[in-house]
Length: 546
Image (tube, rainbow, N blue to C red; front, top):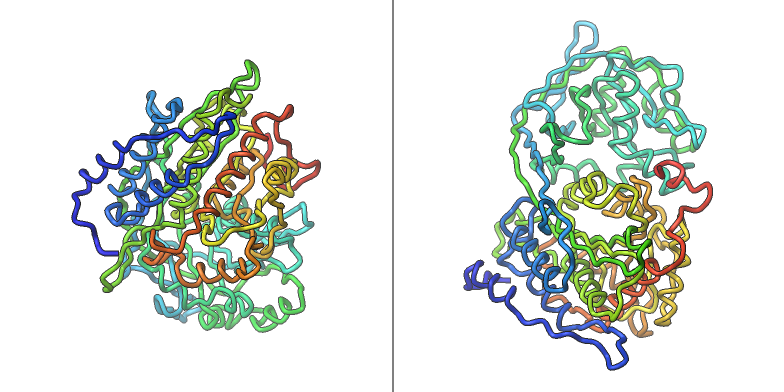
């Protein structure tokens, strides 16, 4: 899209001043208003917001718009100091591209790897300069999972050393649980708990087929972002780690040149489904980097529809949707604005219309409803993580989360997918709600992608709150339309690209239907007699529920 000539502030004032028309049937059965969804989506994906980058003025405008809508619906402010805004402070870390160094020290020989041809390195969030030299220890995948009888640190001492781990996880691990154990943050945690001071990750032949090393070069200039705690230090980082790197296949071979176990033997073990044991590598490594730090802030927007039951109103069903996107593309093309219409203006618009619908009911549901438009999703689920760990409602009062992230609304669907539903009794609640509109609940069609761990709901899961990530399913109501193909075309053509904008072929009947189902799920969760519960023995419930 070309930039519109209207000044930003004028357009914002005009849109915020639009009249709101209730849309309730004669029998008090509330219905979605397509025009409302369209107007939200149009504004939130407009060029003048410049892609709603976390910390940008465009995202501030989006947040102001969301807060104004919440106020219009009579939601109670649930941010800081009686406002709708929960301000989150962040640290951005940028890598000095001339600074990365990785030297392999073997006896009197020093081998310097080439950045970024041989290795990549992220910026340091804790310090502006990191420099460490230490011996290496190979630790397999670098995972400790007693629930799966797996410990890559067994029989190795990594105190004061740099660990070398394989990318990914064992093939035998369940997809979602494996995604948890194999995440970068968890691998760092395992290393730090055992005294390591650095982490080097090496790719594998199988990993290269899925995430080629070459693709990582597209993110060399991407800052690392973390939210700041009250004392000004970044959360979810490990100051003990003084360096880290990710190596290509060729660089890994050089690192293992004098290894007691040849790297090719290790790769062969992986192909056979075996997990290599750890051992000391007869080399040391020097890691060095310089980083620049910047401070930004960005709001979560939070509103409450109080419940009607004198007891259950103190429990909250949480709706979440991320309002941020990825901002401006680094391109010479005329259109460099990543508008994020589907990702996630669509989810935010559905959440706002859901809030409006609840506000029009003659009587509110028994439990209170908490609506949270979170920032920083594109930076690592940061706004949701901040809110879940610093809730503006009493600790333990959030009983369920329904997350809306990038619903593909270009075809009329006949089913919905609720990632994570199989982990709690929310599955039954979602099935009952969807069935009222002749919509079925389908199982996760991509279990290998572990999508349950990859959106904002997972921040709530990590605080012990049952959650689902709701999207339209792949079954189309029109037999001439292949929902799976439509979804795949969006991902390959528009995802995280400037073409994800309002002129996509939105199917407004699909938007209406998805909003209706989303509303009904929330009402079911809010009115049922018992709060949502994890399934007995479920890994995520056992791991995170307090």
